[in-house]
Image 1 (cartoon, rainbow, N blue to C red):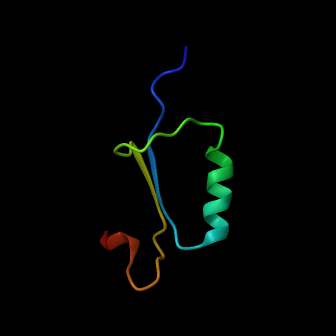
Image 2 (image 1 turned 45 degrees about the horizontal axis):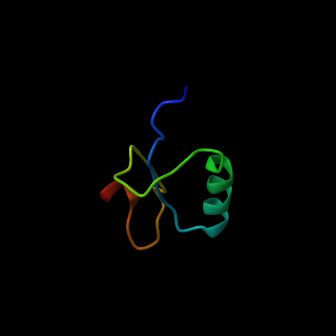
Image 3 (image 1 turned 60 degrees about the vertical axis):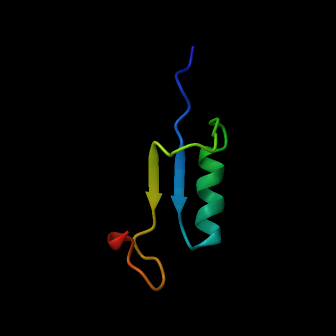
Length: 52
């Protein structure tokens, strides 16, 4: 039996990277609660991901 699904928040400005990440995670079951893991692009335009 599988455990609780991992909640993931992706912060990415590149649509291509978003699609690749979604494909990689598609088989997992995601819900819209607080995330357990955050995937953050550190090179966001106008603000550094390090400052978030």
